[in-house]
Image (cartoon, rainbow, N blue to C red):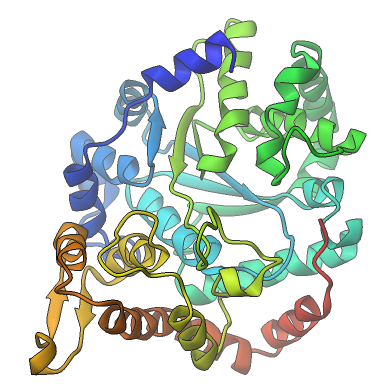
Length: 393
């Protein structure tokens, strides 16, 4: 890690756990989108900051975020994804929650459908037509799950179309970023593609980080709202601002990465169906996957089932219900993660009671998506085509 990157990391602030929990608990998907109790224009600066900051496990930098929200009525947030296969619950539900929180606080969210990037990274065998089908399928899921797409606060942008329409702006920016950085610095960003520095990379994959860095400026983003696995290229964008003497740097708001369901899986993998729940999985499939999930008794740390509750269920419903017999402790409703974690660690809440409750909650979230893909012919055809595609790396 070079001095600039180390400095950015050391100066980033981690939100106080209790404050983060309160902010998340206060904003269910419903409260922050379809029926807001308060509009962004009526919110205080502190309320807006609390909502936006609650999304990130890490923020670089909090004072810059506060200043941005104070001065700009509609900050632009950038999020992006490679259309690379079926959508798992972290990409589907977590992104919908985060987008709805951002729009509730008055932000505009630009979602970058990185079709060219998926091609560079050999997703769908590099077949751009297949990649486009996957992108359309993903948008259908976000519509169905409840991402707030009313008005003009959320915009889906296809990278190929946008870059081609403004090539005279984009490519000089990419080339300047490439010219100002040594190859080892670019290689350290390989994590953003699900690669490591030790992988045998194609020239296209070395080009990729320079392009993703350029996207931030091309989209005029104030906030980079991506996962923790994307932080290295976001830091590269801030370093580029230093190089070109630009004062207003993009703020990095990195959300938590949900682990896979099996032991030792730091993130969900589309190439391993047992590691994740897909957005259109049937109820029985969800039940089996959660039943088989790693969930050691009395262990909270790195427990994927508890992470699902913390980052998916509680923010969605504002509560988590356990149903059990009186001899096993009776029914219990949790409204914050700290209470649940304490009971689980003490042994008063057992995996045999946690898992069925988690399955029930997840299935309730996913049911509108299942219904959409059964009843809407366009969505049904898209899913059939995506399921027939071979996932490639």
